Amino acid sequence: MADLKEKEIATTGLHPRELDDEERRADSKWRGKFHNLLHGRNNNLNDLGKNMLEKSLEYDEAQLERDALKVRRKLDWLVLPMMCCTYMLSFLDKQTLNYSNAYGLQEDTHMTGDDYSWVASSAYFGWLIAAYPWNLALQRYPIGRIIGFMLFVWGTLCMLQATIFNFSGFFAIRFFMGMAEACISPAFVLLTSLLWTREEQSFRSSIWLSTNGFTSIIGALLSYGTGHAHNLIIPNWKLIYLVVGALTFIWGFVIIMYLPDGPHNAKMLNEYERIVGVWRVAKNQIGLKERKIRLYQVTEALLDGRSWLLWGTGACVGMLNGAVANFMSSIIKGFGFDPLQTTLLQTPGGAFEFFGCWFFGWLSAYPNMVGPSIIISSLPGMAGLIGILTISIEHRYALLGMAWMQNVLGAPLVLSWTVPGLNIAGHTKRSFVIGVYFALFCAGDIASPHLFLPSEAPRYRTAIIGLLGTYAALIVLQVVYTGWCWIENKRRDKLGLHGEMEEELLEGFDDLTDKQNKHFRYQI
Image (cartoon, rainbow, N blue to C red):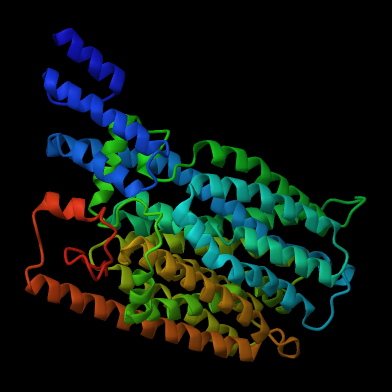
């Protein structure tokens, strides 16, 4: 009998309590149901999640807590690096326009006036159109496969930019690149909410977005290296697109094979660890995934004032992001640096973003510090904008330091992205809020490059004043949102809206919204 139990533990990877024959039959029945759910014979992943949670409750809680740490370490060391590499390539693809601009892109493609601003905006037009449809797709289809397939598409499109020779061609191909890349940010917000607990999410999100800073360093060095390539049959700026696009395409194979859609099908976890992974995130009160579209949740989102505050925040960070992502090289070049210097001098800005994201992500992991971290991390960017506006043009290295401070924007940006995943329950409601959020984010990205009037170079006074106002609006919106969530949490606590722990965990798989589920508490 002991040998049989040891054999069962060895073959399943589980550590259950000793089972008698009747319990083993029940366990076998559960495994059949689990297999059917996992392989698509039931369309509702919340049913799968509830079954896995019920199975986890058969184990000792102390054992689950110990094994949850092992599961988290596996996710941190295997899944998070995959997300980081993917996001790094996504950002590098977008930044190729910024780098190629230093090597004669506008002259070779005969761009004049504000043509470059329109090309910079075109990707976000594509993103704007595709943002909400992608969120519907992410609610219904496997996240890992969607991202992997789109890596093939946007890698190919990135390489095709080397074949373009005029403004209209560049506008069109950047538009379709934006449509392809529109899935990546909402997909990662969703995937982070499915793999890590609410207390862990803001820091993990900050880690994968911090790769933007690392990418800025790598991309600038790559661009600097290609700038030293001589006697090429193509211009240097085209070589940038070919190298980055090829890297993106190749990485797509890794993502399709290994990136999970949630803890329920993570290949790096055994069966028992997947159960523990579901148990870990059941405390988030959002379940796994509900493919059914519930229109009443859309109505609730539209009538929820907190949704509108989040959407306003999305528009603000979009405005700021569009400026930093597309005009940093123009600003630095305007301080009197040549193209090669301009490219190389963008690398410290990447370090500012990398360490800023890590620091403020770490800070946000403390209790009740997500909102305050967004507010505090907005201050360095504001200080830098004031410096660019007021410091004499003769002090170009002081101005350069002010420009580097703009890269700290990555911290409030990703923390703002994380909030809908933390605080919106109900799968249709969350998909709708995130979809509209990223649509408005794109609208901000489209609008902000047009604040940079060529006649105002290198200070771009209109743009700097507009961006200062945007930072101020972001801070006000976040103060109101955090205060509202704090008041609502206190109201629910005062009413004693808590149930048994098992009841609360199971309720999270019933696709209730944050308003319907009175056990839900907002992360502030």
